[in-house]
Length: 417
View 1 (cartoon, rainbow, N blue to C red):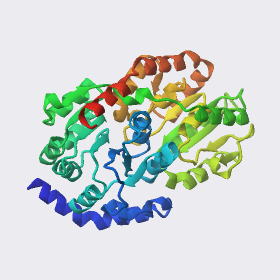
View 2: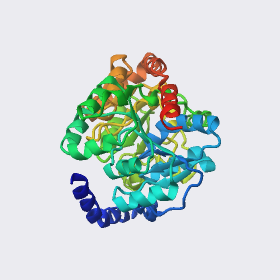
View 3: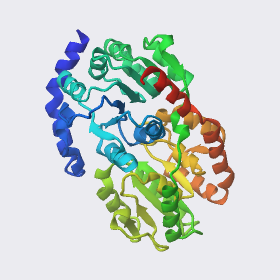
View 4: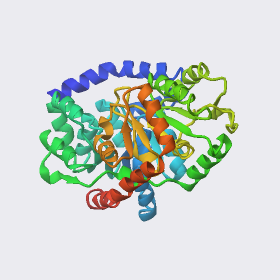
């Protein structure tokens, strides 16, 4: 009954979902492209592919080492990767080219989901992190598609949300063949939602198995040389609305003690590139954009990272990283990327997306919680003078926790292949 009501409501809301994409496409045209795929209309991927769903950029990056391992070990198994966002699609294209197929995941209405599954006939499905769409998972189960939820995490806030819709949550979890939790606390929360103990393993976070491509390091080094190797560089990465001002005010304050300090400002969403550039120009006349095609120079004070798929290179060009999403209430973005490059990390109070990871980094002295713009400026100033040991602490945390990738690959072999 609950699933039928949910499905009816979802069908009624489909025009609003389409309208939302069209509105977003005014600033990011990619949102209006391939919209038919959202309804399950797409060219089929032949050969019964292994289907991997990674909602957006962060999930694509996280699962990339496993994809590379599968491409090498199982060359005759076609891979289909679905995402929900154009930025995720761009990340798939950049990392894998034509070695994998990409489609947008269908909206969670029965018709769209059935069309998607009938078109592609996946042999199995791997869902990255916590995408519990009731129709998608339940219909895959009815099509005899084994499903593994990989790198699964569940915050206390998300637990409460799923408990409000316990009937739908039970349907989604019941479709899973196995769940690989990041931490014991995540596993306990999934058990509290009703998933049987025998379907859960605690395998760690594959995000610790991040590998930094040489070309990203080389690109970042070239930017840093152009900016000036001797000047301090702060990066504000994956910022949301309101966080750009926090970073810009902190940078403005830092300039009093460090006149040469540069700021790399990388908004999370492409549709905000223009507005963030306009905002930054109010703080400095020496503001330039990556998309202009020219390298920054030693007179550049603010550099806007308005490109996709180059975040690791932006981090490689910086000394200290402020990770966004942590003041906007959205739970923060991945602090392991700067940690893997040996950067000290600063984050605001909202970190529930990476709570265990950020807690461990903070305990080891690699990550610092900031309260506001003034506090961000103060801590950045302190780290400019003493950042080496802090960066080394982050590297130790990353190295100590590697190994989840190999464990996940064995789960995939056992349950999906």
